Length: 242
Image (cartoon, rainbow, N blue to C red):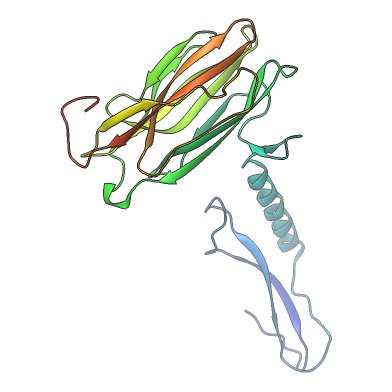
């Protein structure tokens, strides 16, 4: 920091910290520091117009990043999508889906808002060996989909189709070495009835989502889900399901 050449003066600097991290780990933050060189209350503002513009631009970037985290509607909750909008949600690296919530609206094209939560896998699993997008499940059809190669669901991608008032779906899967599924079972229908809010949370730590089976009502234009949950072994196995 450059000091004032005027004795007894205070000054205020606003500058950029090139090493600071923020939400996206690529933005830099602007902050202020004050240095007292005497008892005087006068300030010498060492700011150029370029610095001011940089600081304002950073504030605009931060606001944009926060807005991209979710959309808030009359429900008062945050969702990953807007009505009729496609979305791509992926858990942070090393995490998998553990909770799924949705909200239906007939007036918005019989569409749903979606929210997902992730949790870190056990630390003794290490990092995932590979991750991939599995097969696409088409809109307007009933389907059943499980991550191939003993993978676990770590993300979801979806696109809305106005012609059928439904979405296509695709799971993002991650595989961990020396792990394969066992004791698999399906949840009850989520939601219990068409057009209701839907919510599924894994019953306890140690269960993981491997996929889902869905039914679609051509009359009500809504979908029910049975999520496929499994435990995972601590050894390699030769089969897709142990």
